[in-house]
Image (cartoon, rainbow, N blue to C red):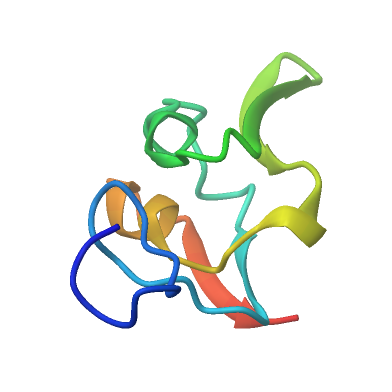
Length: 84
């Protein structure tokens, strides 16, 4: 763990967990590039294909720490964080 409270969860990028927050993926903006999938160190995001279009989805939302690594990494600003 990095600096902060000894029991505070942090991501590989050093951002603290924010319980109660989850990514909201705008599928109209998502291109399915996969950058957010790679950014999630808990492996909760995956790419899904619907009608020949690929986009990101959040699986096991209850395990999401709300760190926002996926939103920060998205080059198309298709992910915003919202309170769950």
